Length: 161
Image (cartoon, rainbow, N blue to C red; front, side):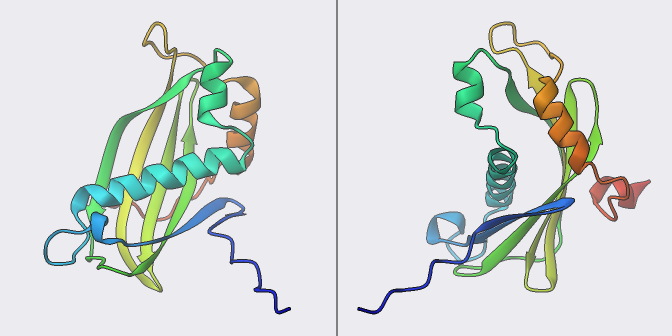
């Protein structure tokens, strides 16, 4: 019997980057088959969630064990070129700043060699019961620190400074 090869991994850790591949579905587009602007933010959210999982942390499990939740504090985005229905996109995520209760990701979405979108997203670590910032759990902070990229390259904020 012929066995199919395993699918290529959709997510990989390639220090210091985390890379996730996604396909653009109809639900991600507007009536013209162009990716709707908010879909880029959803793709980035998925990549950050999968990055946490690849680092050994599941958000649901953290919450069930009394841990913190992660909320978007701000996003600086640059829409460079449109993605379209059925495109395969690559989301590359880098940790570019780590503070006591926040982390900043630089995320880039590409189609092949074409850069389509960049975003710098600041994520706050928050107590679910108090809604206030709290320090990162040591284990998570250590894993973030190990992946910290000290030369982030270009992104929406670094282009404007």
